[in-house]
Picture: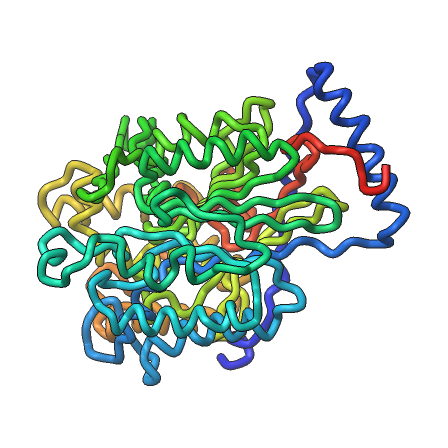
Length: 486
């Protein structure tokens, strides 16, 4: 089992190419002409450019809470306490600092926004990035606010502790810190990598209208910059149905729209769908939006820029399972020279890459742990009817029985034993009836995890895989200027 835990899985990236729009405009021709000068200049000075590498830290709230094994769910098994895992993550980043260009925290930094001990631990863990001068940005999540009922008791406003520990004054004097919104809770960073300008816009919980107005000016005044947006509550994913909060989604369960449930103190909030419609979809220089909040890992490529380029939308969150996430973090590679965008997921705790089976097993557990929430989405009232629906929707399959045994991450007894133990850990050693056999959930695989549901034996990386790669025409996301020296 130790050999499996420490093994480095070579991801088999799916071959998904994003093609350019064939419609050429005067702007496109001029852009391509200018880009040709940039490429010529870069070719003369660079033999082979390294990709830009970004790390995303999703929902660290259970780490900051520093829970110890206590017999409560979600399960904690690390005897050091979950706080140590936060330090594992940032120390791993610092040790690889020569290769890591930027770090994005996706919000829910702490579990209880009023708890100063949790903020102190989070601040201490993130301080390692500041000490190493690694460019980074943070997002304020819903758990980072102070509930209205506690504001008077603590004598602070709902975002005060976030601003004290991660507000603009903390980053004063850093060359890569480009500024904050008028109220300080949103921020942005600006970097350059091998001639490409990159901007990172990070929003506070529920995208207040004033932050959208602030971001609008930045995006409009920097057309030569490729932007990556960080936010917290934006996408949800129940596997059989997923979307942006506030979006009408046609699914196999019918038409579903999950409301945002905004923080009461947020002035003029915007749901995920409103955020996408008002801001994200209106700018040609937005490449990507990534978020946390909802336990899942999910890729969407159906959003388009005004120039009809794909907007990469990604959900990453692990806080609902063992040890508050087992240290999983996301590593992105933007290779401008090769024209590729890819990512994988790694845990310093386990010293291994994450597999789709990790996510698959967690989902099996979450169908039980989150059954009340899922029942509400499905419109089911009783547990009995719910579990009957699970058998029908997620276990019965037209595919050959046992096809999951051919999956490269389940194809030997050692791997099967590891994931059975993982499931056992999630249930604190007491697996409920109907959950004992991971291999029974074949239709869950076909309906939610398969890269190609029509082919049960295609185990390529799909939209819910922790690893993925696609080709991207980065030149379509910015208007280049002349190269230096011209």
